[in-house]
Length: 116
Image (cartoon, rainbow, N blue to C red; front, side):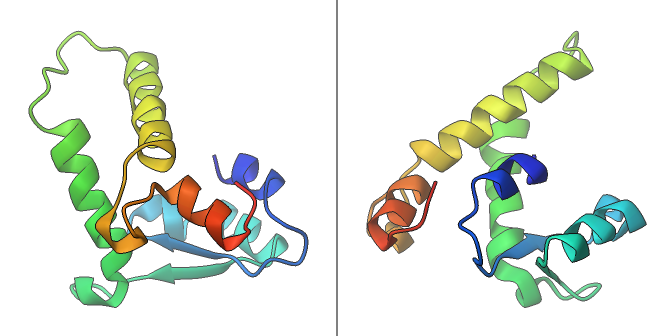
């Protein structure tokens, strides 16, 4: 969750939260959390996905690698959330990226000296 990620953030770190235009990212409670913690919010303009290509690309990969091609019948909301959290953990810790020099996001952050 966002609050768990904030707990691991270095003091004084400048942080940007990238998102799509989902309603939950425009919800006043979300906006308030971002403002309270000094987070910069980044989202695409309506109908202009290149504005936030990194996040749009992530959601495309999430759909292709996690959501599509699975049979979700009979999976509870809690079961879905548990599987999603497991995928996100894999994506962050283990999934290497060419753009990060064939490192996972966690490895790349450690290499740069950022806390993970």
